[in-house]
Image (cartoon, rainbow, N blue to C red; front, side, top):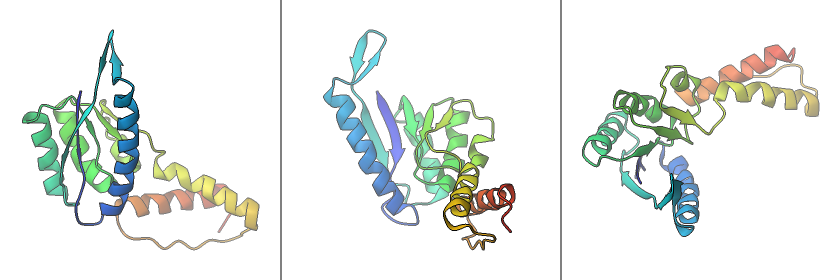
Length: 171
């Protein structure tokens, strides 16, 4: 089974991708060390095809298109970034290729109606209420300030915190 993914060698997604790749390698070694995935009545090993997206949206979309059309991968692992996954999920969907995401948690991606994209992460807007609830319980806070970078993931996290504050009566 060939699975395509990108790993950046530079840019904003390098650190998260490196950590995610370590986890993916542990999973891959475990699966292939036990004979691969059971598909029907046969065991099939997984081969990972990687490309460098350099944390660039245009390059990532081109890399995913090439993995689908040239490498003919069976499935995709999404980039380790909501920004990059938002762009590449559209490519996977247009080519009817399964994509699993373990590094993108923006709800916008999963509200697009893609039928072949899944996430193993909890979307960011769901994380805020739990975090605020814990702060209220542990620290008895009455108000909270939110400062965030103006990019997709931090903005969605901030929205979740705002929702959590409203739900918990926090100003």
